[in-house]
Image 1 (cartoon, rainbow over the protein chains, first blue to last red):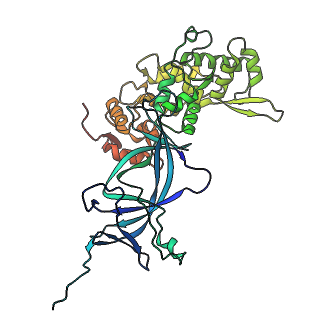
Image 2 (image 1 turned 180 degrees about the vertical axis):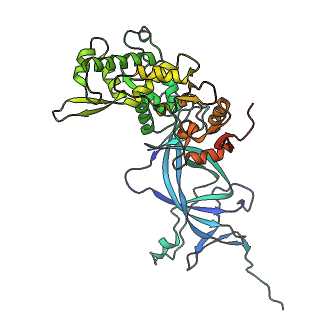
Image 3 (image 1 turned 90 degrees about the horizontal axis):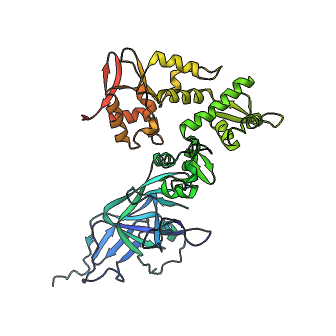
Length: 114
Length: 334
């Protein structure tokens, strides 16, 4: 494994951890779809709006940071000489936004009784 | 940089320059989304102008990840590989034929699941040497032959054991053995130093020499009468050296329950590397062990901050036998 790019700081990513599964509204791929909106309250609490649900989370500093690895090349047939593949460390993740409370539905329009 | 090492039938390990970690896949029922460039509240607070919407892409997601746990380097294989073709000396016919059981540093780095520093350190510990670019272990008989040349010379020259001159050794013994081998045996069994005049000397290691001679005696039979062995052993070591049973820790075991007491060869490096297998093996050899007897045979299993006591608690069960605390297997062994 090696450092991506040259000398200097590695990209810092953030992990967003959700309980359960994420499904696209219409059947189809997740790729390219909008997940939702992320906000922070004045106190720094992350708030995620997914579809018509709202989730409250918290910012957690990871005790054991993650490294994001990207696999490059590597011969399809492992050869006896030399490394068989190459992983590059693309980014480090030291923080995660953990959403583990039950999503609350947002009711935006309550018709008034006439 | 880091390297993942392991053959197809081994568990992958990740190695830094000097440490080894076991790699395990961890599963989570949660979903982990990776967001490059996502800002934390602290980062946004320092930039009050950022009230705009930042479009971030989720780079990917996963439900599992690799976890690293520091582990003991797996070095037993190193000795096994080098024992495929021990060096028997320049006169041996074996080296004439090209055998492929020879390993360079690069070969070892790709075959041994340990970091480079751990491998190089272990090569030193097992007294391996580089001959024509390949790491070799000496055949025991050849090693004892070399040691004998040196101890006999020390005796005939009446040199003090703490001041054996390198140059004189090379001069006197150079006609019998390769100079590299003479120097190697001195380095293996002595501590090198330089005196005020810049001359190289060796302080011979009494414990290591006595231990090697004990091994030479013990390998010829299944077991020995203890008192007979102790007598022969003392007579076999160089003048001025004193033999002690504690020099044989991890090499030989005394059976105090037999009449007369006996001693037999049991080398810790011949035992399994895995913790549970090691304990099974030891309890197969002897049902009940005292802590003092078993410690040399499990010491190398201790993880970074682990004690022998902790290992015994985990893998053995204790009981009292004739007022002495002994350990036996936790499970019935066939």
